[in-house]
Image 1: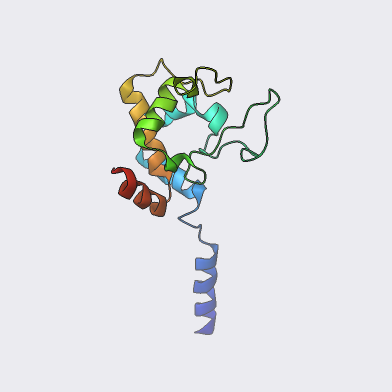
Image 2: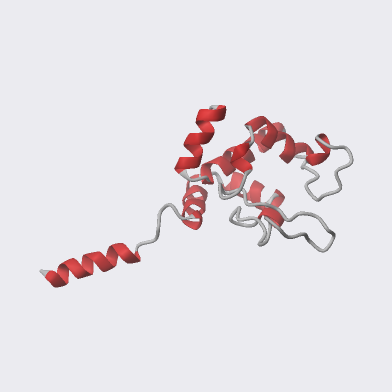
Length: 142
């Protein structure tokens, strides 16, 4: 009896955390159209990471050109503080749409259709932890 309890306990201790960032990304990727995942990989992953994790040191380091590093888009940074419209504008037109003198690397993806940009916004939101999604939906709607 005690052996069985120990085995069950070990099983649950070794199970992956379903709320971990990697598990959320894997789950979302499995449930998302491969075209949308490919859209992210082809247009965002080179800076924001294959798993939306951002660049190491994004909070306080600069790249070799003196620009800020790309933040995570997975709910562990500030992306979820911004409205869907703001996220759309940054993805589509970059930060020059807010500041014409911007010299950083987020220049936008003007070649993407409006539908593709909204698919990217939805994809990011799907990866966020449920608690973040709830706060976001309360603030901005779905």
